[in-house]
Every structure is written in structure tokens, then in C-alpha cells.
Image (cartoon, one colour):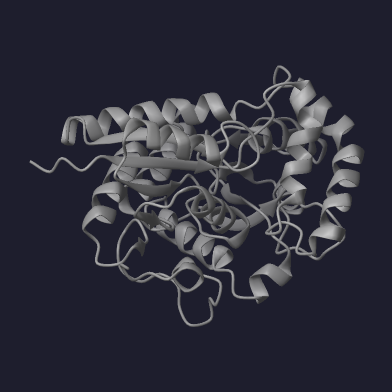
Length: 347
């Protein structure tokens, strides 16, 4: 029996755990060079200024959820479910650790905990299904600063069968539980990015499109669908169309709005406040006849099975960096994909 101990590093953004953490969390976020691409002597004071200005409104939004982000409790449940699934496959060989990029438990804390457990190697498993330099890329760069033993990375899983099935099940179950109304327009809402990030070769938008197409193939053929992007900040032009504009259009078209947070696997401020409160109000203001927001995947059995499958695939894959489904996803136009950025061959 293989006695190698493998740490599974579940990577996510992080979120403030209380009102006093909101401003330092925002400062950490905007200090990330993957978020603001400026030299440090410009980026760091700018990050402090942005965090100071945005903290009051952000604090008010977190107050609507009890004062802090639910992301860590959500991620902890996912880590426990994945641990249970892996333990059933290989007792004692795997242990899950949470690595948040911008708040506790920080990546350095996860690396230290993995070393204390006695891990021989690690698999970096992002809870971002779609690769971007601003999320998975930033998280893995930080991980490599703190982990010097062998590792592998699951770079993305936009078309992984279990991930797609989990979304399809969530969408159809939610629709049926609300009476299975007709005249549906399904909005696939994903977090947006500045256009310049995509033009530079980031594969994120392409992978969102692949996920949406894969989900759509299992949905009623008469449904209309539309990809859209939320959470725009700053003066740069972002990819679109914006989610709020598509909600208004669907409402005015008299559609049953069924909105799925296609890039979010956990409930957090973008789903519980932006979608459930702000965008729902926007839909109602514009005369929406029906509004349904599909829950995030959470600890869906299919989703957790997919994560476990990604771990097992990564162990045996010939490349150190691979997508959850295996095989090639990005093409030559994606100069910023993980395999190009970090090198995929075993060293």
C-alpha cells in the first residue's frame, strides 16, 4: 500500500470574519499584484486608499450577513466532505487543508499545517472552477512561496462531468421546486474581469462559456440562456454583458428569470447580497414576473465526487498541472493559462 501522505490544499479567496476585518481584508485584496498590476510603490498606497474608501459600504453589506463572510464556514464544510470521500478511498493517505488568499487561514498557515501533519507532497485544488491569473494563478503563486516539497495543481474543471451534473441538478431541482414555470431565461452569472485581462490571454471567459454550453445541453430545449458578468468595480472596461443589465432586459421581456451563479461554488457576499438582495430588487423594480436564484453547489454530492475525482486524476496524470477532466483545455490564444505560467512537466 502506498504510504505517501498527500495534503489537499483547498484554495479560495477568503473573506472577513467580522466588521473589524473588513478593511484589512480589502487592503490585502487590492495589494495583490494579480488584482492591481502596478509596481509595489504605487500599488500598496493605492490599495490602502481603496480599502479605506470601500470599507464602510462593504462593512454594511457584510452586516446583512451577520457581520462577516460565510465563505470560511462554507469552505470548511466542503473540506470535511472531501476529506470523508477521500478517506473512504485511501484511509490515512489524504488530508484537506484550507488556504485563503486574502484572509485567515492564509496560505502560509495551510502550508505550515500540512508540514506539521507530515505531508510528503501536496495537490493544490482551487475552488475556482475556471482558471484566471487573478484567482487560481495568484493563489498558486502564493502557495509556491510557502511550499518547497513536490506538488501538483488541478488548474481548472470547467467541463468536468460531475461539476456539470451538480449544476444541472441544482438548476432543475430549484426550477421544479418553484413550480416549473415556463418562458424561462436562464442567466449564467459569473464574476467579471477587466477586458484587458482577457485580451492578455487569460482563459477565464472561454472556460465560463464552455461550462455554460455543457450545462445547457442537459436543460429543456425551449429555455433561453445568457452568460453575464457581475461585481464590476473600478473605471476599467469589463467583460460583459453585465448581469444587472441582463436582469433588466429579461424582466422587461416578461421572462421567468432563473439565475445560476455558475462560477461560484460557495455562498458568499456576491450571491447572498449582490444576487439575492440587490439584483432581486432590480428585477422586481423592472416588473419581473418570476425570479429564482439557484443555490451555489456547496457540498452537493456530485460536486464533492468531482473534487475527489480531480485529486485521483492529478496523482496519476503525466503532467504536474492538469485540469480536473484531464487533457488540454486552453488553446494557443491563452498565453496566461496555468500550464504556460507555471510549467506543466514533472521536474
